[in-house]
Amino acid sequence: MKRYALFLDGEFHETAQHFDDVSPVDGRIVAQVCTATAADVDRAVAAARRAQPAWAALGPLSRAETLRRVAALLTERFDAFLQAEVADTGKPQALAKALDIPRGAANFRTFADLVAVADTHAFQ
Image (tube, rainbow, N blue to C red; front, side, top):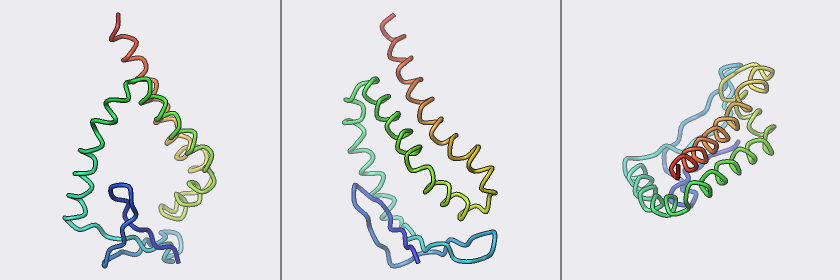
């Protein structure tokens, strides 16, 4: 059975406690997921705060390109995300395939476009 660790500060982190991700379709355990403690959350927040200056230093167009790469990776791994969505939520595959996974990628592309447009308007 798959067990998902926390991803904190660039590393996977196992925890002592976890919860079962149960399929709403048939009640089977899809995976075990590590549970974050308050200290884990604090570590994640601290890592995000340390990363923010580097993200801001990229400049809007570089940030937009990064968001577009995320969208491309979601599209490349479409089938894996589709399987995970169906297993986790019990959604019909056709619905998740037509709506959920494409929308996730579209959201990143939309945010990338908004960043790029905001950068263009900043110089007018």
